[in-house]
Image 1 (cartoon, rainbow, N blue to C red):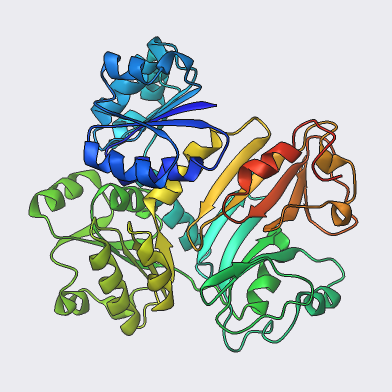
Image 2 (cartoon, rainbow, N blue to C red):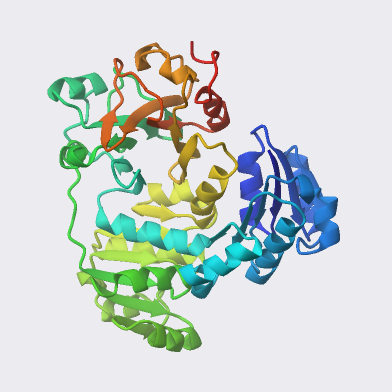
Length: 453
């Protein structure tokens, strides 16, 4: 596939880096020559200096033969124009990043589709919706729905007193006649690995688990977790992410939103009906005390400054807040932030990448999630007729090292993957994959005779 990525910063470069190890031909267009030289030195891709909304620049990028054009600059006007021009010049599919709520309204999206933009996305909206989902399952650090919740991927941290401590996967499996969940990866220390039946859980392990809805309660008990009721929220930052969260939750929960900008605070008062807006600096501990942080169930920091989000969440933990969520844009901070006590980290680049990378893959992929806990993916493949995965029982398939089949969705039924399960045509198969394996796995769900036999 020929892919053109138009960007002017980290989102474009992160996306290019995520796709560069695939079999795609990647061209990145960016106005900053020095940044492109840095990218070229670390990745095997083509770079073009220039503005992506220029017909001449897009023609130089050979847009007429592009299968996919993704425009993720900070300027939504340039992104929209880039996608429209690219489609007119022959690109097969276009995606544009936007920033304003109006552009994502269904009636407006139809107009943009007619102009040639196939998909509009907002990393801020995606991140905001992820926060809302996490508040529905507070004990989870990360959560991802598969096929409308028929299966879920959760990341939980094993408590010292958890029932799973010092037990192996085989021990746990023997305790349950019908296993409704399964550990698919463990992050311990600085490394991530796929567990075997003999793997023993240790305190402070970060464990990715695939579960059926009916397995959720028992899973939480094993991990030493207990969902808390969320009623009162303190939300830091009234930017796009904060607005999405408040707008979606303000009729259900009590929300106090602290915003440092006076002008933005006034705008928020007009936009939000049931949210208490406080104009102030959330780094001021006295302000947090005055606004009742000790009675807060969840503290969510989503300002544009990662350091502010991390620091304020740590303050909230000291006051006994049960659930803290921080928006952290620097990928290097994610591991550190979790280790120092912040419950959940949200990263807009990872959230948006999941949506965009899926479009670079074939129709055998129904969904993909780039995990923020570690650099890995959860992919929902559709098994094609006569593909390698339909030829043998799961236990006899030679999956690439660093990957594991976690579950299967067949029609309206979901299954936890076990050794004697037979994958059939059109099954949705949930695979956990460590870095660099997604496109290798993609091949074995095609119609072919090689691969896993």
